[in-house]
Amino acid sequence: MCGIVGFIGKDNGVEFLIDGLNSLEYRGYDSCGIAGIVDEKTKVIKTVGRIKNLEELTSEDLVFNIGIGHTRWATHGGVNKTNSHPHQSFNERFTLVHNGVIENFSELKEEFLSDKKMISETDTEVVVQLIEVFAREGLSTKEAFLKTISKLHGSYALCLIDREDADTLYVAKNKSPLLIGLGQNCNYVGSDALAMIKYTNKFLEINDGELVTVKADSVLIEDKNGVKIERSPFTPNIKYGEIDKGVYEHYMIKEINEQAFAMRNIISEYFDGHDVKMDQEIIDAVKEADRLYVIGCGTSYNAGQMSKEYFEKWAGIPTELHLASEFAYNLPLLSKKPMFIFLSQSGETADLRAVLTKLREVNPTYKVLVLTNVDASTLSRESDYTLLLHAGVEIAVASTKAYTSQIAVLSILAYQVAKELGKAPNLDLEKELSVVTTAIESILDDTKEIKELTDKLFTERNAFYIGRGADYYSSCEAALKLKEVSYIQTEGFAGGELKHGTIALIEDNIPVVALITKSEFDLSTRSNVSEVASRGAKTLVITLEKLAKEGDYAIPNVHETLAPIVSIVVTQLFAYYAALGRGLDVDKPRNLAKSVTVE
Ligand code: G6P
Image (cartoon, rainbow, N blue to C red; front, side):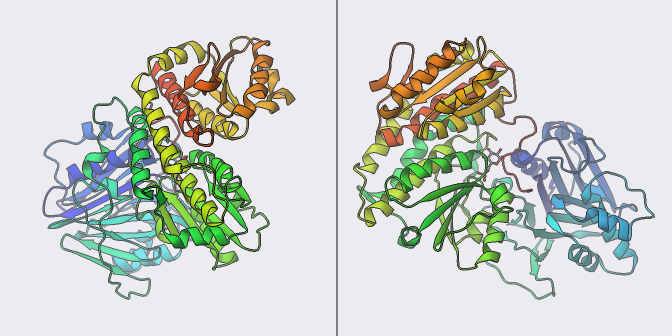
C-alpha cells in the first residue's frame, strides 16, 4: 500500500505535501516523511507514526520548490524511522518514494550491491541505490532511472528527485496507482486524485511502463523506448468539500449516516421513473453469460455474497463467489460463457488486478464488469465495463456505505437482467429501495438504544453473529466490521453450522447476535439462538418489525430480499460504538489500510 506525493513549482510545496499525505493516510499510517531540495542539498524529514507527527517537525520557514512525500504501510522491514521513506542513495544525490513491492529486490541486491551495506531493510532502498550505481556508470538520471525500472519485478509507483537537478521529478509506475495533477506554475504527483483535489481538478493518467518527467511548467510522458505520448487530462467526479468530516466526530459515523443519501443517489442514477437506467451493453453481457463469477476482497466480497440472492433467485443465472486473492492463484473451472463481476470500493485493490491480469492471459475476450465507488480508478479503466456506486467518497478504513451501495447496485443490475430474461421478480425495485432508504433513516434517527445495546452486549473478547441465507452473508460482514474496528474476535456463522463444532466456544456472557430478515428462517434461527442461550450466551435478535418478539431489536419492515441493506446498519453502529467505547482509533484501525495495492 502506502501513499506517495510529489510537487514541483514556483511556490512552496510543503503545504501540499503535508495535505496530500493527510488525504492518503488511509493507505497506511505507520510512518511518514517528506524530502525536498534546498540550496542544492536534499533535506529529509521522517518520523514514525501519523502525519500530524510530521507536521510538528516541519518548521514554518521550510520551503520546497521540489519535494516528495510518503505515508507507509510496512511490508519490508519493521516500523521505524530508518525504514520509512523517502530513501536516499549512499551519496545522497538521489531520493525516492515508493508504493508497492519489489519482488526481486534480494536478487538485485546480490547482483549489483553485494559489496554494500544497506541503510534500511526495505525493498525500496535497493531501487534508489541502483539508480546511483547506474548514474555512476555515466548514465543521465533519466537513463539510470529507466535502466533501474527495466530490472524491477513487482509493483511500484515511484517518484524520484535528484539533488543535482532541482527542476525535475521523475515518475513511473507498474500496477500501483499514480496520477499527475496539473497546476498553474506547478505540477503535482499523488497516489490518487483525492490527495490533490484541493489544489487541482485536472489530472493525467499514467500507464504501466511509462516514464514521466514532471517540471513546473510541463509534463512529458514517454514509453520505454522514449516515444512521446500525448494524453488529455481528465476531471474526476469528486469535489474538495466531500472529504470533510463535517459535523461528525469520525468519518465512520459520517459514512454510516450517509447511507440513506447514497441510496437516494443510486435510485436517481439508476432509475428513470420505475424503469432501470443502465448501460444496455452491461445488461446484455450479463444476460448472455451462462455463469457469473463475482470476485472481491474484504467487505466487497461480503457484498458480493449477496449477489447470489439476486442473480440466482431473480434471474436464474448460476453465480459463484470468489475471493480475489484465491482466484488469481487457484483458478476455478470456468464455464463456457463466463462473465466476471469485480467488486471494489476503491477500484485499486491489487488482488483484483491480479485476477484481471490472469483472466486476460487465459482468454482476452472474457468480459469484466467492475462495481466501484471511484470514477477513473485503475480497475475501472482496465475492465470492460464500470458501474459506479455513487456513494460519495469513503474515507474510514472500515467500509460501510460502499457495502450497502454495492448490494443496491447489484440488485438493480440483477433485476433488469431478470426482467429482460422474462423472469421479472415480483417487486417494484425502485419503490422498495425508497422504502429501504426510509428504514435506514429511521434507524439512524435514534441510535441511543443501539449504543446501550453495544455497551451491554460486547463486553467480552469474543463475539458471534449468526444467520441463514442472506442473513448468514450479513453475519460475515457484521463480524468483519466489529473485529476490524474494535479488535473483538468475531465470527459470522451460518446459524445451523454453529452446533457442528464452534458451539464449543460458547460460554457465559459470550455475545451471539442473530440476524433474521426472512420469515422462512425465523423458527430455525431462533432455535439456534436458544441453543447458545442455554449454554450461557448473551443473545440478541435483529429482525423485521413483523417478526419481532420481546427483547429483539426491530428494524422497520422492508421487502425481505432487500432487508440485509437495513439490518447491517445496526451492526455497523455496534462496531462503531464498541470501538469508541474502547477508546480506539475508529477511522484508522491498527495494521489496516483502506486501499490495499499489494498482493
Ligand atoms: C481493505 C479494506 C477493506 C476493503 C478491502 C477491499 O482490506 O480495509 O475495508 O473491504 O480492502 O477493498 P476494495 O477497495 O477492493 O473494496
